[in-house]
Each structure stands twice: as structure tokens, then as C-alpha cells.
Length: 293
Image 1 (cartoon, rainbow, N blue to C red):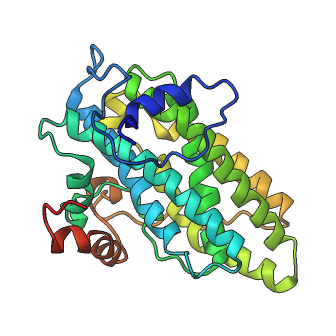
Image 2 (tube, helix red, strand yellow):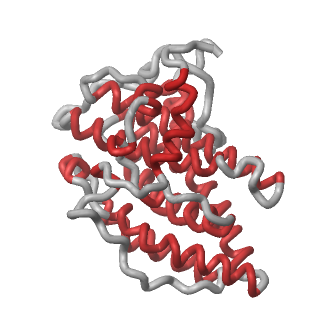
Image 3 (cartoon, rainbow, N blue to C red):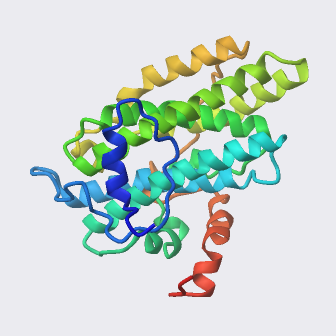
């Protein structure tokens, strides 16, 4: 579709009163800035805004790859389709955010260059999204945690001074509400199901809970932009506790995962799981640099 433009679709979705646009993923686009004012807002450091968009974009890109890995592995065909669509939602968000980052950081890099030609230490995603998939209960638990936190963040970012970031958030908050609904329903189904399914769901929540804290730990660029993720903590934890209670599951008391000299995913310090994931993501682009299809 020659008139399918990434930011034009953002403007259309943001203006849709009923939020009927669900899947973000589209085809290629010619002008990534068409339809939304792309000039950095006055008083905002473009470098900080680029860094922030890169963080959010990397979160979405990496988790989208983990979700798409469930194709041919999900417990039911319907869940394969659902998880693929959730992954494509996040991929659509990643494309827009990486495009914005490349425009603002002074390098002019495209979404593809940022996705395929950075090393793992250059990625700025939180570690929660890069962990290996584990079983289906872990997939559900991670999606519940991420969608709850990211949905609340995007809800607040809809009023951000940067019109592009605000437009990404306006579309994303609708998608993430559906993601959370999907994870919520499966958490309750597994937690309040058989004794075996409850044990598996509780184990998944216990395993992933220590990684949740990183979503609330502010990066210096975020604070300079007036975005403090620590303000989300109480709302997000309350929302998660409500779901876990409905699912007859316990809220873990585990301590947060340790940082490395105060650094974690936002600073390029990752787990060993990220490298193989990026190798899988980047193999075709690196094997055939500059190829067109």
C-alpha cells in the first residue's frame, strides 16, 4: 500500500473515538513523519527524547520477538494466532518508536538499521522482556506484568509535549488494554483451574516478579523529560494484585533482581538470553546487507 504511512496511521488511530483500530502492524511506508508534527517540542532535549524512544522501542521489539516465537509452540491454534497478533502490535509500536529515535539522535538511522545493526549492549530494553519464554504460564505472567505497566505509562504519555510520542501512546494504550485483558483471562483460567495449573501459574509469577522492578526504576533521560516511572509503581502493583487475587494466586515477596554496579537493561547491561534472540532477529539482514525484496 503506497499510502500506508506510519505516523499518518497514528494520527488516524488517535482520532478514532471508539478505538476500533487494534493491530498496529502495517506495510512499508515512504514518509515516516507524514501526518504528525515531527519537530522536537520547545524545551525538550532531542537527545533525551531519542534515548527514551529507543528504550520504549527496544522493549516492544524484543518482547514482540519473544511472543512470535510461540508460533507452532502454543498450546492451541487459537493461542498461536492471538500471540502472533499481540507480537505484531508490539512490532508496530517498535517501528514508530525506533523511527522517532533515529530522526532525533542526529544519525538519521532507520528503524531497520536500529533493529538489525546494533549489538546487544546497545539495546536499551528492560531485562524482563528478553528472558527466555519458558512455559505458557510464564508467557502469560510476563505479558500481564508488561501490559499492565506499559498501558499505565502510555495512558500518561498521551499528554506528552512531543506529538509523536503522544500519538504512539494514544494508539498503544488501546492495544495494551487488549493485551492485558488477554493475559488477565489466562492468569485466572490457569490460577483458578486445576491444582497443577495453579502451581505452574504461581511458579511463573514467582520467577518473573523480581524482574518487574526495573520497569519502575527511572533513567536519567526519563527524569529530564519529566517522566518518572517510579510514579507508576503503586498503581501497577495494585492492578496486578487484583488479578492475582482473582486467580487465587499469591503476590510474591521476592526482592528485585540485582543490578550490575547500578546498571541494567536501560544502560545496555543484559542477561545472556538477549544475544541469541538478537542473532535470530538479525541473521537475514546481516547475511544480505542492503538487500531489497
